[in-house]
Image 1 (cartoon, rainbow, N blue to C red):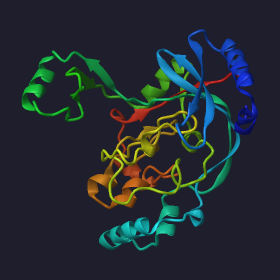
Image 2: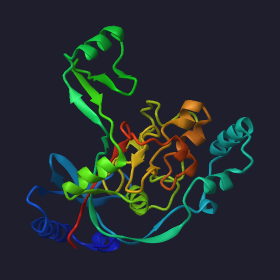
Image 3: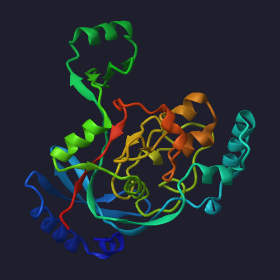
Length: 307
């Protein structure tokens, strides 16, 4: 099922196709119906499936365009000014166009198979524990005014508006362990190209929502007047939303969807802070920061389809 073919189907045909597809999948995979994404702007109805309490969307495939051509970029004056300020401070010897091209993958055609893709990624190695655990109680005493604390990337808590506390401990995980665990369930991770297509959902702009990004705050700042990066994309996926969240893929030591917060933490400027959420963003230099333990990063499961 190719994307254009899926778009041309009526709602009745999409429902029938999805029901027939579910009949060829394990009984644990359940077709839940069609949903429209996103709210406002262009919309695409996507088939939603449930597996083990998590939701997956049907991602059509086919020959698709991925990568980014920086010559098509039309930055605003504010984006250019933000980049120039950063380039002067950090001695970046490039203009905004050549820099964007240097940190994004080149335009290319790839063939993608249809698949079911997990809508919400999960934190790797995060294991829920009771808030009555002594180490959590000690944290609550040490940080009584905090709504979220992560102690040494090993355990922490997050408080809800209703006063409830969700606590966790982080278990070390390696790429091999994750891959083996998924394979035992008939699941896998997205590949490098699949992730890019899943993020873009057919768009060829710098970001999955367009070329524009704010020039006076970072994506991690809580601003009610700009939430496009927090909305699901046309495939219904919550993806490339927070630069601190690096998403693992099937290729070892390759992360997508962020830089681990390096740019923002380093205060390099708003445009560069947003650039790490660009669909085709990828910097091989980040490999030097990789470790065997990938806990704390995020992962997204894929259910391969029989046809």
